[in-house]
Length: 164
Image (cartoon, rainbow, N blue to C red; front, side):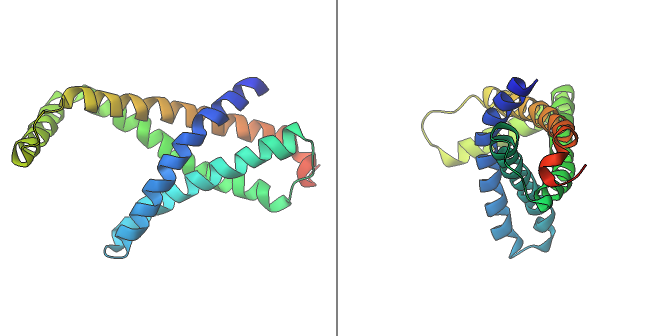
């Protein structure tokens, strides 16, 4: 199970970089619109979770070095927020696939935008939307699995944090 945890961790690192970029952009957007603080908070917590769990895996589990007790709390609290984002990704991916009216509306809007831009070759909107939905579904499932494994390893290796 540790091997699966390591593999999922490495797969999620690029995902964390993408989410970090989104967090940075949404923080900039929040300067003009306070409602954008919630997405930036959720994205930021997910990035913090991925970084702290990566450190826990390498320094704590693999090297068996003692960890700061605060890192235990960072992983748990940010993991709970990351569960929200991962579940949201899964729900949105499934919902969007099942709603053909919404698919047609988005496709019509994107095609209208492409026509206004007149950028030469028109991208296949359906392929792009399917790629994004697949990315959201896979990353959501992997993130939820990673969080559950992290919580199990936090209990198993609680002695590294000074907890018994």
